[in-house]
Image (cartoon, rainbow, N blue to C red; front, side, top):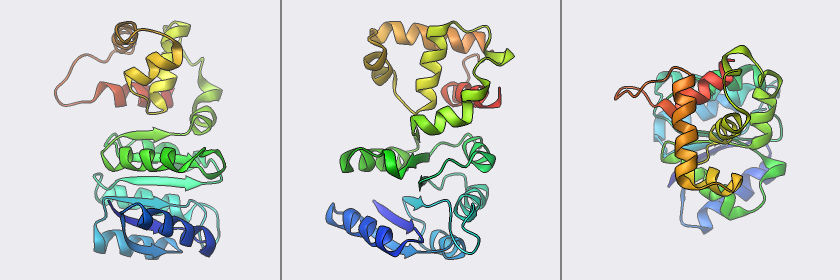
Length: 214
């Protein structure tokens, strides 16, 4: 993959670049602030960008806001947020553009290198990949909102795992269900959320967004 790395910590930035390069990926640019990130993505058009959220000058949410700006300009730009923090105020906006190719992982919770690289590949391919802790903080306070009250407990569990970016096969393994059972749960929750089959819309993404908006 062709990758842009945006990380203000010189040590972490160098570590990411070395890790990616050793595994055959091409790092097109390594930057330490949001403005440089914007220029690098616009100029290089990478397959995916790895973006820290808190960057100079205020170290609050510059990286996240830059990612949102880049996605507004071109929703096909894949972005993997890689941070120590869950920033809920803008993260929902980034996830709500419905185009896919978005990830949000917490640095302290990535268990191993293959897991990180797999998430990066999935985001570059257009998937949505979320750390469960991110899902918990974004959605946890509103799990019992009115729009989800009609779902059974099992359907909510399936939807929560969908929000983490898991496939039906992964959901089946996690919940000790058959693949057919998961498909039935997914179909039922689509129906309950008012998401009919459509060639224009991705019902899986819309279901996760409904989960978020509730």
